[in-house]
Length: 214
Image 1: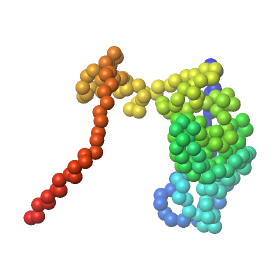
Image 2 (image 1 turned 60 degrees about the vertical axis):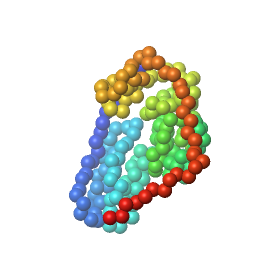
Image 3 (image 1 turned 90 degrees about the horizontal axis):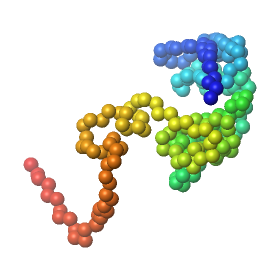
Image 4 (image 1 turned 30 degrees about the horizontal axis):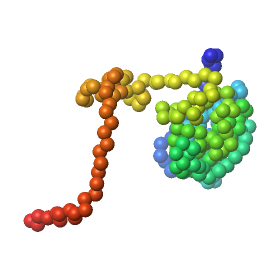
């Protein structure tokens, strides 16, 4: 597998304490310096803007939306689709709500952006926006719960990456010691005898509870 080298071009970091509305001249300068830095950078595959989401500036109703819009224009990002993000999961039929969603095209990259987080254990988000993972050269999925039929089956190469950390799906790597043993999946060859436990609703009314009054 060929490993691609990435280079990072930080354009213009800016930070400010909470001090109310940004003056029109200051915002114009920030926007100008940001866009000039993006134009001066060599050809890039992606641009990441870490925006707070609550910026206020004189004369601009949505300062951060303006910055995003102008950066897209410089990078020639094309909006291919807009939707309300309402979709039905192909795995179990439940509804998901991704909020306002856009499909963007930037060179050879197709980007599906959502307003709300949704689970990616199946292909519902992509299929509902005209993007079939089977038609892409590379698919990266951050979920240990995907059924093989959604991504693994039919793939020319499948790599399962188990990154270290407290959320690893490999429970044996987490170092649990305070628990009854043997315990699956911490131990191998743990016997399992399935038994059914039946719960019935009692036909007799439950006795009334007495309250003590002090």
